[in-house]
Image 1 (cartoon, one colour):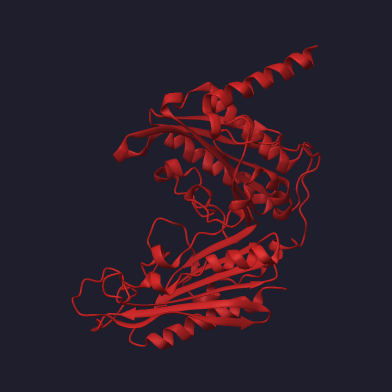
Image 2: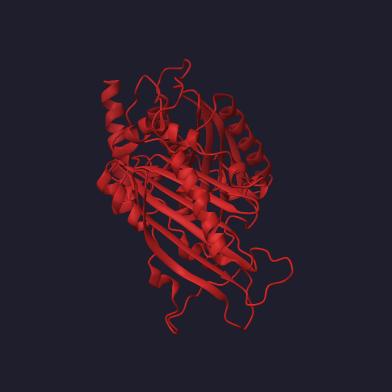
Length: 418
């Protein structure tokens, strides 16, 4: 009798959500609750696949699902906590029955000794952020996942007065670090609204249980990591690109030396196993590896990552629009125009894109703001897609800088196992 009453109550609740939000409510199946934890990022993607729209396997990520956006980004001025890079990761918007909008979930596979300290670090940053009246934090401890919840009410679009509440959970279990997030408009409640906080926390717990399983014992840690883990482990030391090159920690503009990311950088697909690493120093490097469900979708995704050449032309003059950063000279810059050319090596096929540009007159000691080169390899082998991007100061020798960038990226590509 009690189970029947519970089932009726659940059905009534779902009906109320449907009535209130109409077509906004996703048709969401319940999450599986396996006994054992996922062992790899590929396992995670498979367990969550039926909660993802197929389009997300190709369409680019939004900012919320990007694996390099700071943890608990709503209070990043307090934390600035860059998520793990160069490790297997997964990010997607998941259809869940408990919420009228998708639940955003980001996961990383990190060394066992780092996962909980990283979650605790995010928790401390959240509590500093909670000094504001519009922010609330709570502990999160469910199904072996331990971390912190944060809820913040603020204007999502200040110019339009679009006020809403964003909620985040950052938690760890075994080798996994996770961030779940959701939001609701101010008309439905503020940061302390128990209904939407509870609904989101329950949906997050269900998604995390699908990943971490119901068993509360030690989680499996394959060694060495197979699949995407092996590709991540094969990436070179940052110093392979130069003695001062190190992982990017955020907070500066060094991640785009050409000041052209709005043209040359296309967002990655969501809901697939991914490795992303951004390195900065004298040069900037971005390494990205994706495992798509099959070769056909991998090739489609790869092609979408290549920038059409006509995007680099002015609609008025038909000339290249790329200039060095902070370029204010009246004279036309010296350029090697943007070019896409076929590339094939070691079973990898695709394209290489490149351009270089400099001021007509260089200062005695030019920097990337005076002269810069850009090279990117966008290639596929089977269902694996790789995008490698190199940017560096070019001085007076634009062609020489492009050769340097191509050689650096080719060495990295040669390291990746088949």
